[in-house]
Image 1 (tube, one colour):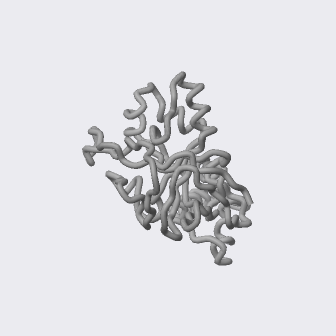
Image 2 (cartoon, rainbow, N blue to C red):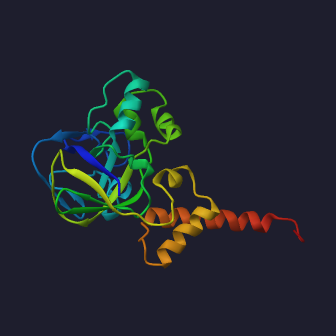
Image 3 (tube, rainbow, N blue to C red):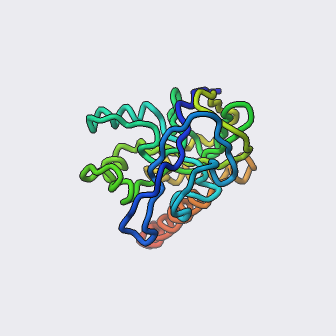
Length: 226
């Protein structure tokens, strides 16, 4: 199985004002020293201002890869320190966006996490970066990282090993979901779920329903006899 390392654990540094209905964002994360406890809704000492979009059990943690941070550092001509993108976990040696839906990771001795769904860039992320069209650029690059569900709680600290302990057979990655599932990928996820191999998050189930509805509309639009 694949392994990597945990470069940094990042917690809320301070709430920032926004122009949306929530009024604040918790995107400002900074790396911290020492062990941090992991629980079903994330990390002790962290916060999501809007759990509708960035929290809850299926989005308890957000992981981003150092290779992708290095890519953006080159694109933007600036450092991308851990936490700048709002991530809780900065990883080395692992491509978070290439992780398979339902894949499970062990971090350190105790913590087990499950890959759930991609991050979708929002206006607060755009505001945070202060780069024109960054929301669009981030989406087009499809280097989005992954949200994670906590399957087993414990403590983690920078320097811990990150190990993939189970990988489902369906072959559908976080990047595939972000770019838009096709019918074969959707069928593979559904089969894996039916076999008890994975549990699909509400976000993935919504994507599957959207695809099914679009496919049904396309079928209805075909001329009779085809």
